[in-house]
Image (cartoon, rainbow, N blue to C red; front, side):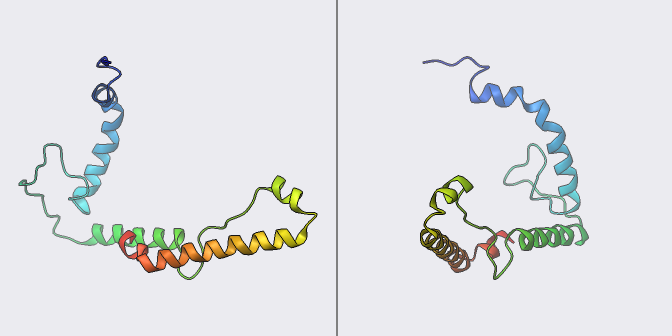
Length: 128
């Protein structure tokens, strides 16, 4: 089965290049002032040398914002998500309040196990 150039991945990538270019340009301009290796210029290769901004204010700002975002999305010592059952399912189980309490207890146990796994794998360190 052959694909026409407009339906292939390469054709789609080329066709959408004009929509993507303003965002890439803006990101490259910001990276020049902060951390140039995040968004290198077009044509940058493994042996190309990146310009050093000779100041750390931009990089410190990026690191500060990323840590604030990390703390907002994944606060320490508290779950950043809550497992719940949709309301129609709860209404069906409302007759058996014991079953609802048991369900809430099981979901809380899953939440704690996920949080323990996140703490064990040190995801916050690699994300921050």
